Amino acid sequence: MVRGARQPQQPRSRLAPRLTGTVEKPPRKRKSRTEFALKEIMSSGGAEDDIPQGERKTVTDFCYLLDKSKQLFNGLRDLPQYGQKQWQSYFGRTFDVYTKLWKFQQQHRQVLDNRYGLKRWQIGEIASKIGQLYYHYYLRTSETSYLNEAFSFYSAIRQRSYYSQVNKEDRPELVVKKLRYYARFIVVCLLLNKMDVVKDLVKELSDEIEDYTHRFNTEDQVEWNLVLQEVAAFIEADPVMVLNDDNTIVITSNRLAETGAPLLEQGMIVGQLSLADALIIGNCNNQVKFSELTVDMFRMLQALEREPMNLASQMNKPGMQESADKPTRRENPHKYLLYKPTFSQLYTFLAASFKELPANSVLLIYLSATGVFPTGRSDSEGPYDFGGVLTNSNRDIINGDAIHKRNQSHKEMHCLHPGDLYPFTRKPLFIIVDSSNSVAYKNFTNLFGQPLVCLLSPTAYPKALQDQSQRGSLFTLFLNNPLMAFLFVSGLSSMRRGLWEKCQEYLRKINRDIAQLLTHSRSIDQAFLQFFGDEFLRLLLTRFIFCSATMRMHKIFRETRNYPESYPQLPRDETVENPHLQKHILELASILDVRNVFLESTIDDY
Image 1 (cartoon, rainbow, N blue to C red):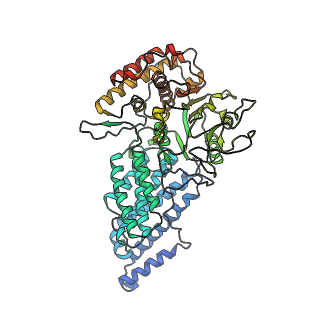
Image 2: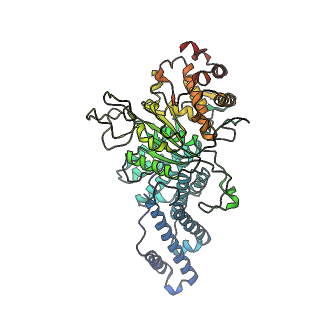
């Protein structure tokens, strides 16, 4: 369920409903359910002596596995939400019990139907829990293949109609289980870009909510209708549609493909750092979201993942990977998704990532948040004098922004200032700030000599584009799907698939040329090259330069605040204003027949 901002000790991702929200507390005595089941057997099957011993044992074993599985599932809430080691053994035990439970009910279905009275919605609950386990294992590991496993179990529930009889029972709590299943299934489908399935699920969920609110006098009708509104807005957030010849929408994936990042040419001298950890933080007011995932968070999440692989081809089961099948490299960087965290929550997760960062690895921090500006003039220009981005607090948000009257000599406490990140620059740090006050991070100081780069969004956009901010930031869209962003600023809202693929191929050529510009530059700061050896960071850097060059050539982007910036600064003439790159952008505009919205050159403007 979707709720307002909370302040727990350890924040969870709001990517899905509460993990253990539908689980009853396990019984104190393990035998209680078994004894109850056996009494039911006696009442329905005659005297106790008439029940074959084997069937009695089957019911007893099933009740034990069911109780044990719920007990372990409930215990997941007590695991620390940060740190990559402590949770694995517990998850492994939970998977073991649910695997046994699932196989057991398959092997003994007839006995359980006759003697235990096993109902189809109970089988659906077991499958739903396994789907949740796979999904949360994805959140813990960032391995996208586990999303496919979660989808398989959720899809089986729907195909086999496990919850179909729930509506016939006069128990609203069972209907809520069904509604929560739909919400979780939609989240997984969104992450797998299965938009056709999402649309079908939304329609089914809408019908289920209407029936639920009609049959029961409930207080959560508004909340469930809000879920529908959020997911509808979420799937319509992309500003451009790619169409087949029959006008059906093409679903495009923005995860890293094999040919996604420009290859390093022989002789290119770059660093050997690899991206190991990422914090994706969303705290923008009024931005479209579904559950605990804003559009910006969703886009950056996918920009830091590879396309899912078949889990069965490389894994046995979560936490039980054979050394012979172990992939030669980690597929995706580990990620924490933090929706509207407080400062203390953000700092806790940041410190945990910093502590566990392996040698020769990079920590990425992505901040999509409302800007916090200094309240008064300051005689100094230190790391706490330029404001920063908003962190969550208990105070009210007024007019879409946080305004707090306080002594002008004091700094805003519910704010992540650039100086707050200084301790973490002891290790390689890659920062992306998408905010109306991103320039606060332009005045960074590299105290410890480790590689440090900040990519900073424009602080304002031309008025013609401002009304699109609720559907996600243009800057993040460029980092996630640069062609869609290019089409949007060019005034296009749809495109045929053939032309889209042609432009994508040309964009790959542009990325290769940008990579050469960076590595051949004689004046570029070495920090950029230190990060350039990692595929994800290389792609983000080339897309950042493409974004900056595009905006500088666009006729309506004429103010300095309309352009992205970086720390350290890039040499303009060799990168974002390079004539060779400008020629490529004009050629791409010509392919799309939108050359008229771009300047022929920006050289005369500076």
